Length: 424
Image (tube, rainbow, N blue to C red; front, top):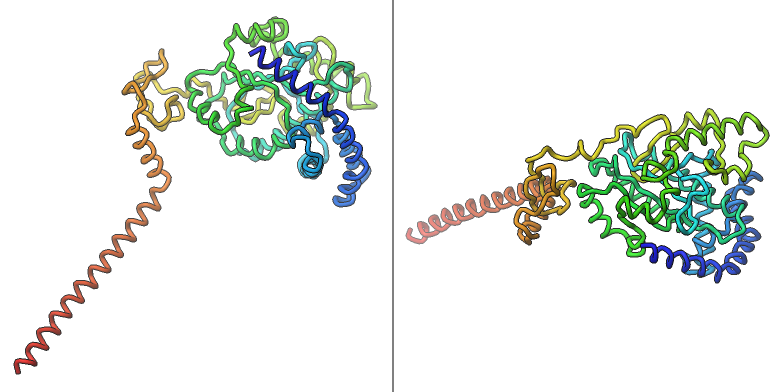
């Protein structure tokens, strides 16, 4: 794991160094030509134009977009232009950054990348309510990297590592539409933010979801997903870089967030001229990156970690979070083949005793069981259409049969009449 992550980082930094001049040249072209064109097209005012210029001055973001387009200048320019228009549709006017659960500096992974903590929880609202928060959350992460690079003379920090905690995640609360929308519509606007994902508190109940994800995600993304044990997690990050929640020696995330809130309060009371704290504040031992807050913004949206599955607010525990243990069937109860709790989705399992992971009922994956499951799923999906089609076929056959009976009777009557006339 360490060797793979180190090799990926060195490859990314080498690519950055080799193409930096091309990125800077493209950046000058964007500021000189593309930005005025977009300004005229969207009729932007001075504030909007300055906000767009700030994003175009983010060299690391432009590099990630160019890398996604294989450093083809024309494709990259078109992609950046579309992204700029998308940002005005979804991020303008700018909101205060969300308060994300990032372990504050100097805590990083062994390669100097910030550590993002995400606790996946259940949703208690429609997916549309969370879409703006997901976009704002990713924009906050981008701004954090930009500020870190502005105040560092060392190698650029291009990515995060994420600790994805599934402790309170139930497969029954998975919002497929929201995940699909995030992967298709939002992630392409913020390419290359994540270097690796470490999934913690993963158990057999999540296996079915992961087996589906493996068939959807590209190989490059799968190679950056890890399922470490507690010992492996501490060996990679070291205890001094993790909060107590994950076996480290740092204060818990709740304590760190309270301390950060106190620092923001004291900073805002000492200076009202600029809502943004000094950049040096992000390098304190227990600080975070600068955020601005206002009463209206705090009332409008949750201010903590935003995930693809749900949101955990700063006011308390996850809303309507359903622990995995409550979602499991009682001991001795059968687990249906089509249940999301079935780690061998589509195949019958032995009875669940509550202590050991369930096993295949017949000891292997039989083709007849898979065929039966496919038929059951097809029946559930197309039951009404199948029944309607069968009724139409039956009515058609009865109609045709009735006409044939009438025709045969009529033909017999005509034949009898003709024979009688001939005999006369």
